[in-house]
Length: 170
Image (cartoon, rainbow, N blue to C red; front, side, top):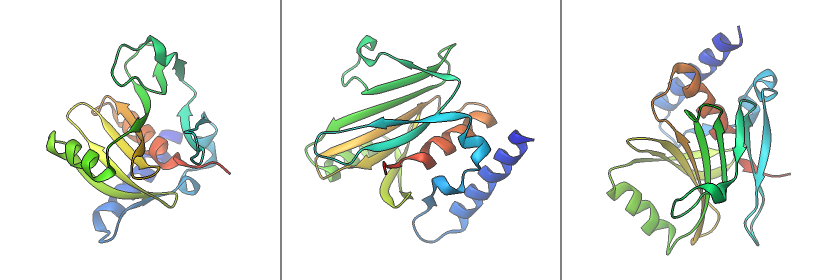
């Protein structure tokens, strides 16, 4: 029943996005409490910026980001036990927000404006992942990345919940 409800919610969100002429909006308050209870809110803090919270499903375990050999390394990393599904959160210093978004688009990614809990963000659809760029100021961004891009229907719903949960801590 939960999966059916989550699917219906996801379809409503997709239809709303498709029909809207203005910037699509996601809101944590639109996610049913029983789905919210299947995970926990995590925090990421960037010095001199508001603390941002986001939801991580209960079946995704925290991984030590220092164990990742990547440049830049994520600030937070979560994955399922089998490593098939991941959430990475990057805190990035960029030369400018406009240049950073242009570089993402220039790499062949699809970018769209989206409002998430009142924060003006940019959704990113890449070949292998989907993500959301949360501008903190003109030179600092948080980048939430979920992999794989194409999972099963349940993963698509989970990504929607993750992205809908991004908000300023209260």
